[in-house]
Image (tube, rainbow, N blue to C red):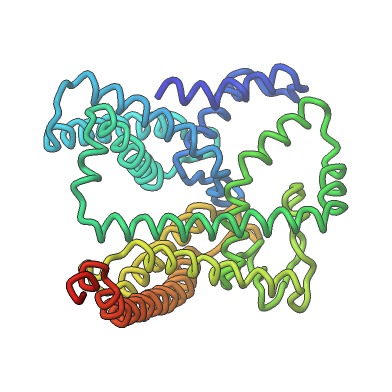
Length: 388
């Protein structure tokens, strides 16, 4: 935990040393780094102007990697190779980590900024359980054997869900790249409007890189239909764009202008269809008939892929204070439902047709073989010799 805190706090101190201080001291810079580390756990910060809860998703990598490495070490040194004992290690790790994060949050609440204990505890438990559980299983050499013990249908469904989720996020990345290229002038204007000095320019670049995963989630949410908001009463969706003043952040320069849907918006709607086709093709190819209805497995995989995108969308949303910036990002529930239905229905249809065509082809090959067999038997040299 100390390592993760240092990874976030030390760069803040470096920026404070290199930039004009404006009456702030090293203690203020250190506290800002601690608050940034708590934000990485998706903690809500109550400020005089409202709630600050919008987290650059790239920042979540810091506590996730720290938890994974620490729990992997704990699983290795525990010397236990049973699932029950490893789960005990995970439970102890989650309890210890969450308690420590909650203690830091209580100490950081001062000076007009209060850290919401419930969101901090929930975020710390989720990160410690997910990343720490994976690390502990790897440290105990149990991850591979436990995955291998899962039924084939479960592994196939998980593989399809992962593939569908990857296509959705990849489509969002492509959409974001095209939009950045089309609106490069707006991105440049927003960057110049901030007038950053060399240190501020580096900090702005790092912040932009940390915000990229969230931008991918917003772009994927746009592609599946519900879109996202950039303030109260705004909407950025394929059905149309309604915007007001946006925060002066370079990535927001990629937003389309208000008005009717563009050709790029219509083309983006193909992303969930492609994801469904990929999931259905995987299901039709790898699912044997003895494992149940292929279309049903593909449908479940598509729903899971949509649910994963919904979770990512929900985590990427938040608030930048009160008033108009109280709502930023997609609605995770709407995104998950829309993506799950779109990907799942297409996946089920593709898997059903793929399995049906495979069965027809196999039946045709069997019929052809049955017709050829009597002719081959008639022309058998051994029978011809006996006939003589």
